[in-house]
Length: 320
Image 1 (cartoon, helix red, strand yellow):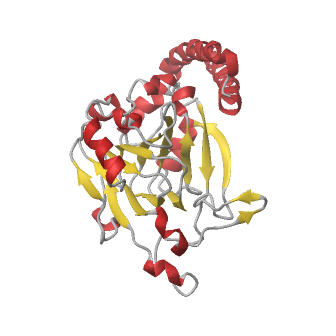
Image 2 (cartoon, helix red, strand yellow):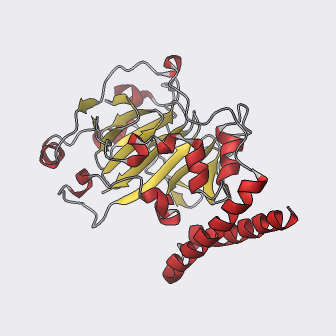
């Protein structure tokens, strides 16, 4: 037993050291050597875990269902369409260029049809029994005074912030290229064909990032420099979207502590907005909706958007 415990501790230490290299530097020219070594350590860890245990202790083994009482009243619905072919999407992009929820669009993703990303056991298994490190944001949102970041084992993230009924704070694995760090997760998804539609500011290749967190995580009202296909794999998210033409009514921030924050609004839209402080907000036109498992959202470049998780949620964004 002592040898098994020592093997577990050694493999965990090596994985953490290698993960810090991947997270902070990307691994450079030695990335694939690092990943091969992590895979070897993972096999040692799996053998040790079989005798020592170590899975998350919880009666919850998957994501909870949507509590209808937590769903905001939807006044101005985002348009919806069934699974579009690339030609139909291209026409929408070049003519209307408005937010669009596309249903039945992820039916070929193993993460969706196998519901693997809804299974905590699967996520623990694919992250070396939860010992892989992940960068998480701690605090209500990135504009909160208490906001900070830290790198912790995935298992700790689950136990402390996802499954814990009384977590010490909100925590969010936000906008992280987990697919480069943990390539096995990349096998569970497919880059949507929509990401290769033609438009004037198209990227050479889509930029994919993962978003995973508990109920209540928030992305404050902000805008991004690219078009976005946002795929909801597990859980539910509320979206409120304003066209870029509404910028004048949304009070963009300025430079703060030497950082340009003009892509983020001063207005806190999570709840009742202070119209005495931000009177022009009342004139802003918007669309809103709930994005559920297996659905995609097209977000035009420069659209202002606020996002809130209504349940634990796992999503993937594709800037294109």
